[in-house]
Image (cartoon, rainbow, N blue to C red; front, top):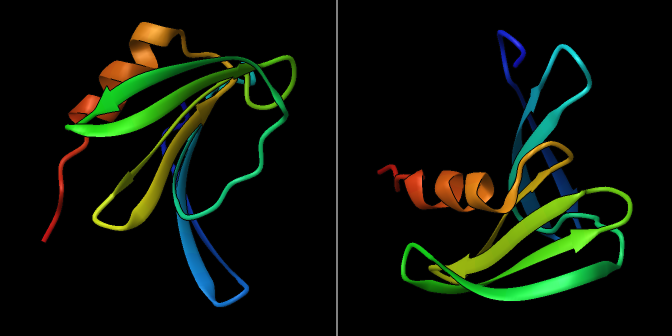
Amino acid sequence: RSPDPTLGWASRSGEVSYNVVYRGTEGGVIFLSRGSVNAAPPTHTEPVTVRGHAGLLEMTASWPKIQIAWHESRLYYSIQSNVLDRESILRIAASLKEQP
């Protein structure tokens, strides 16, 4: 894991998205986002529940290797990674805490 995550934002079609990126020293990436994201077409999809909300876990043959996405309080959230497994990405999503 990198010592300092990077924080980014973008504005597309009037929607502002925010992201935090953790980069590992050997190329691993974990990308947490609020707002739209880009992903390759899924090779596997699975419905999941994240913090009491319906979500979708997807795996791809490209970027990201795995992704979980859900809507909460009318906002779109996702976690993408090229190194996490199913259990790890679900654990990270479940551990997120709403901040005032």
